[in-house]
Image (cartoon, rainbow, N blue to C red):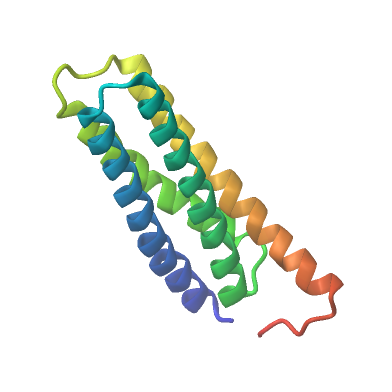
Length: 139
């Protein structure tokens, strides 16, 4: 695949899956603001985390499948998680009272690590499984 086409695929899929991650994160935040039970807040937070893991893993597999470049999943994960971190941090600043800077920095860095790690690892695993199974990689 040509480098320009691969970068377009990384950006396109990163934007699409990153948008889905943003929707799930903001939906979880809105639901958490409406609940009163600590157990419900914990359950919603756990479901949001699992959805983030699944979406970022899906991103890594889709990008590597389309581009045939093993590390393109990590690049797409960085792009999607950066987009998610910016939007979620901006939304957190608008909620009264705004969280402390330490909490915002930790959440921002956590989003970047989760997105890069899950998308990158799932992309590498997909490429390795394709090679081991003898499947023909698209060129």
